[in-house]
Length: 313
Length: 227
Image (cartoon, rainbow over all chains, first blue to last red; front, side, top):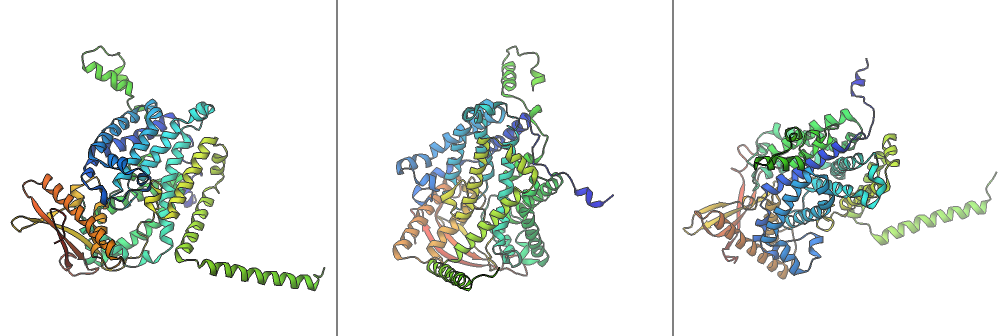
């Protein structure tokens, strides 16, 4: 047997055979992310910072000053946080909720993310989940634009492929941009970033990056890791078509994110969570529906629930 | 069949004129390095998307894609490419450029630390990132570095007015920082903040922080006034 055959598998677009359950699982993951994010992020605290020192993103900059002040105030952000949290929880479980509240929720989340990026650098932390939210919200209302789509067989496939495509293409962009100045891969830049990140003010515990100044072997390890990671980032789109490469890619990228946390104190848990969407065949059959949760709540209150509540959950 | 001499001469002249014209236009445009890089990056992205549509399976998926999904895909592709090439993250958000860790910085890294000044003169560590945890992923640290760099840095050229505006911004931020710190740490109140620039060595015998160079660059009181 040719050993190369081990790595061969037919080229097929990811999620080509996805069904409604797979899409519901994606909904659960994406809005689950927002539910966790909004629970642990006290976004309203930025209302304490003076608006005069903010550098809002263009869309917020276009707002009149009064409206900007209103949007950036702590109380508005507080209300927005909990409204978005409630809607995210609903959208996690209900297709109907996503259909009617998905787009407003996306705009609200984009506003929150824009406001947070008015202080400091505009980074890519929550960009992938934000784009995934946009895709899911638009696709949930697709049959309103085109009624013929209601029974289209690819209704689950296309949104899922688009989300995975955005993630992979973004990774490739990172690598391609780096190739414009490849010296960055071979000089001491990586060593410097690791040292700086180790001592940077951060809410994550101190990492091991500072060891790069002390030990050449650590610096070499980081440099080799940087080159290999750039290669994997460049090849990311292959993961959309080749199942076996996808698993190798997922393992490597997950390891890369963990290493980044340990050496540079940067954790992209958002992207790591979205890696779940790269596994085909996972669907929401085992996830509870809002109806089942509601019936369960009612039975706790002493009401008589339907006999199949347990089965629903 | 032989080409008439007059025609070949004419075509030679046309070629020469074309080359000269193109050179003149390019010279007139004086293409900057940034433009060349954008063109190069654009070509790389075009190559990437061309490779994406090469597999037959991808083309079949595209052919079978209903109109609205196709429109959404094209919109996403346009947004991602536009955001990437524009290199203006604030302008194109939520389509931003993915250009992290792409510029060589092979020199000793410089960081900024914030130290609170208690009423009794003792020094208290202040962490903007922990005071505003939602501005995570180094966003807050970058913000502080940016503000301090504008006031005390040597890289940015600015006139007196711009410098005063930068000092005012850092003052307002310092005021907010003191207030937030005192609110969340009532047992350790502070009356002002020091900013220190730290230059870490790229190579050291012991921990890098031990052989780092610390430079106190400024002190702002609780009213945001530079002292």
